[in-house]
Image (cartoon, rainbow, N blue to C red):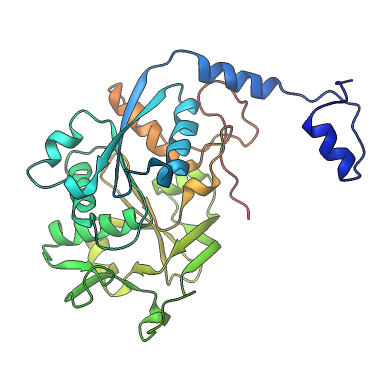
Length: 312
């Protein structure tokens, strides 16, 4: 019997719960701690954001990278990149030597062109890329500009008068003048395309993920984007909204409209972070990435510690 003291015992007593007489099984957590403490190879990942002067703005993203890194028995080192300082002249020096690029979420036009350049760098150099919310939108804009040849492609969040709004308001919000309280928030389902990387790492066709955004991929441009090689590998069940995009001919270029970092855990790295880090590790070792979803009951030690739940 464990000693009847400590915060846990106090909470049980104050909540009127029955105090267990069974020793807590902490073996799995002890194994995880030992894995974290053990010296491991270092994997440098570039995080290209516009709030890096306050790193806690990306705390959940950094922690999710750590979860996935532990699963692959490496330590992640984040290279903080200010997207406002990234230009065509500086992008090579700022990203050289990194093993993967993450473009996280955010709002507003500041620093957007730097994020778009980061997406192009990853696409052209076949470097693992993970876009999160705004990161997906920047990836779509970059693809439309460079691959489709639509140089003025943009989001109406950044340019209300762009002639090619590949990212736009949600379909039912185009005539809305007041934006307060209109974002898509909370848990929503998405259906994954069989054979896609997203489907491989989740290991299931239906997922539930958390959202916080207002702009979406413009359905008018979906046929053009798909014909040029962009896969809409995750969509809302009714097919109206794009949830995940990826490039079929790239080792790992995947971006989500939702925020997977909100559902990652130390013992269950989120599938998208796990796939991203796994691809970065494989390529840094000269191997081709392999994507799969291990059993939910996988142990907390060794490569691949398990996955985030796909249920709401």
